[in-house]
Length: 515
Image (cartoon, rainbow, N blue to C red):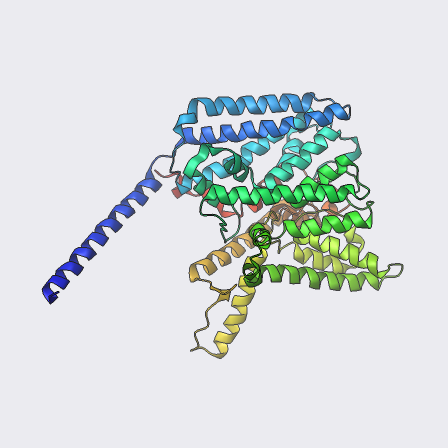
């Protein structure tokens, strides 16, 4: 080929590439600027409400078995399903195949608000919940797997309502949209935007080429862990109902218990079983998938997993030593309580096996620091996540090396992958925003008349989706004493924490709503 022909060939190819790039940019601009398809949103929300109504109906047999009034759940299921059906029916043909990111963020945020709002009905119709504020707080706390409760006398609540409390956490653990993607084909390829918007953490793990395949496998693991835990709990001193409720609340890392004393008066066997499944709930579910597929190389290379397990071991060892040195405690008891509470707080489950506020202040401080860490990305736990913490710690260490060797090129790597600058900036932005929201929220709660310790405890427990905090919202208290406006604000923090800030906060920007 002559030089002239080669030159002509290259120019034509460059022109064609530029044309294709221009077309793609115009498509992307159109996708962002086109009007939000509200009929699609109503259709999707309607299908989700119908699914929620079916889950509500699952509690009716418990009402009949235990002699409870079934009307609260029956009426709630009927209202929720009917409202969802008439939202879906006139709009069912309007679900667009290509949802934009704007629509994805809007649908996911609205889903969690609407699902929590309708989830209040069983509580509101029950005589044990007086106000809509308390009912909504309990519902939002359940679906976001926070585990904070306003109930002061849990023994007076009927079994059917206790089952619904635990079920809300099980649904919210993996996400209501992810459940819909797994069993309802209505969303089609539009489900990818919803999967991306709802799945928390900086890493989006796919174990199958299609989103639906990934979601189905993750839900199968989730369901299997729940069933296995139920069987193991039945070998201990738990009744069938207690085993069901605690299985639903453990793998989801929610922490709602059917007992007034949480896990405190169950046997050591029960506490160890729940500890194991809290650990599993805090692990990235793709790790469990690789374990089942015997892909040990993937597991070995995942540094976040080893950091997560390392935090558990170190914190447990320190607290065990501190408890053991106290008089009247043997080593096994010290180890069991230390391990249980470390795992419960780190994974943001929130179960309590002993009132940790009575421990020495230094040990309580360790638990408080764990509240800012959380579990692994891709798990059901809340918090900042071990991945982000590890990246920041490693980057800080590398900055010291760069100061000593300013001309050296020291890339930031994690799990044998180079972390690009854009990912690092996102993580740093998340940390800065998380800290600012915490400081502002503590100030807000202090203005409502709460003492400083309770203000910190309520904010950290809510935005981290932990449940019990410190102060008067600690392990022996409920959130009932929080003023009503404070409860609504904490519900907002729970939603922020569950969807990891940006998915919700982007809706408050002016550019989001521009056509």
